[in-house]
Image (cartoon, rainbow, N blue to C red; front, side):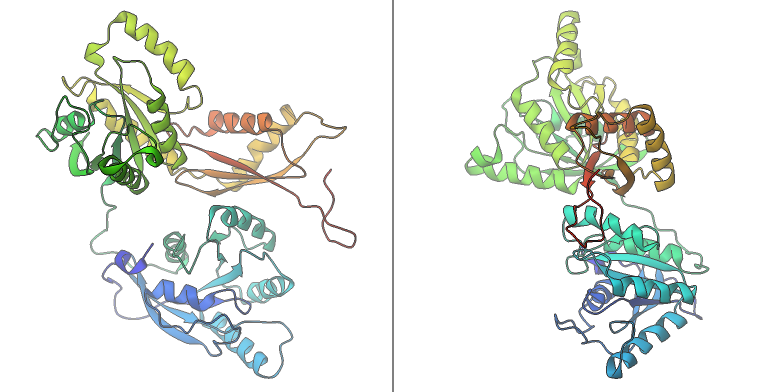
Length: 460
């Protein structure tokens, strides 16, 4: 994510500009985060701790809100000499700030210095957002949930170096700033991005043309007419959507060659750029291995899913019966995927696409409050505990939602869970909170064993 392109023209009225202080122990990436926030490399960044010594303010804005971000040196308790002066500057920045970003290294976790800094921040009585920096991948992002132990609320996993999660963090900063001024012209999110995918000749281009009410894409009975993704803004259900018609996928990307290989790469990129994918099946033909491979690729990408059985005008009663059996057999792993039966040729039921897309996207962006999640999970485990294995049963200590788009949940446990029980929790999670049309990721983080003298407890 590159922040400058996201920054809107400021509509902040003249007068007081709020201040955001960035603090933390040495070498956790404070200056890198400041550079990410201001959208340019201005704060000096080196791997050597102690490069930043004074409070250094920079002008910043996000979504039309102007503020000052203050970079500080590394804070340490009981610091002496120059380190004491640096720590004093950081504490002064906290005292004058409206919001504090407390940066922790997510790859290391909470340290004694971090815990001491939390005590200092609590004395300041300022709003504090906990930033789990260096969360460069999903594994580290999930691990950052352990920082709840610092008692500062939800950690915000980001990668200041790569921009991962920085937009969500800045949205949280704006929410925490005092008395935000009114925006003269409310900014609206752009059209939702929808990828039309499927094997060749299932009717992707025909559907795009039907929705656009004009010939936006070339349609031919010969499979493989579409090579480059065709991008179009269309009105569906009174809302503008950005649809991308993609090349039909015949083979795995690694087995394709020539034009088909590059078309497959562009299709994969279109799926990654989309928020929701409409996977088209030819309802008049049996569900093929390639159909299953394509929908598996979409699910693995983490996008919301709507399955459209096209060419429904060609389906008779016998085929309808066979198709229901195929769905139960071939798509049993994704019973949560929304399904619509349409005909791009006749226009049958294409108006059902918009409600399905909205439902899938709402599920994709759903966040369950931590308190509500753990209250439900406690009742579930009490009613159906984990089976006893080897004389003892793993316990789920607590759970948290690590992210959205798609929803990702982490279960912190005393020991690994059986795969069957993990699937049971996911199934019950869907029954309780919905998530129709969206994949849901449930991962388990067993408590680590500690050797003699360690602070942790053994599994059990």
